[in-house]
Image (cartoon, rainbow, N blue to C red; front, top):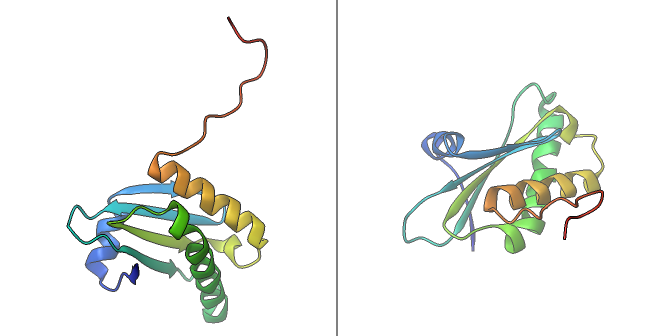
Length: 122
């Protein structure tokens, strides 16, 4: 089940927790440490992103992305805040998806180890 973050207090609490910074978005994650297992999500875009229409478009794209990724990669009982950066409006959706997956894997601790190069020791 997914719910929305509504209050400033919830957004500020998420800002003090874990974060992942990418080229077109920033994702914050907070463990609520309560018995509610719902995943709560909030979205924001500052005026640096652009005018009102561009900010709305950036948030719509992040909403679509979170609806796609959080059922598989989100943790119950956590809050997620998706913050759009300037490039979120024009970036291809595939790039948003890759960044979103990378962010959620890093925040949930399921990051796959990077491939090693060169000869391996026995």
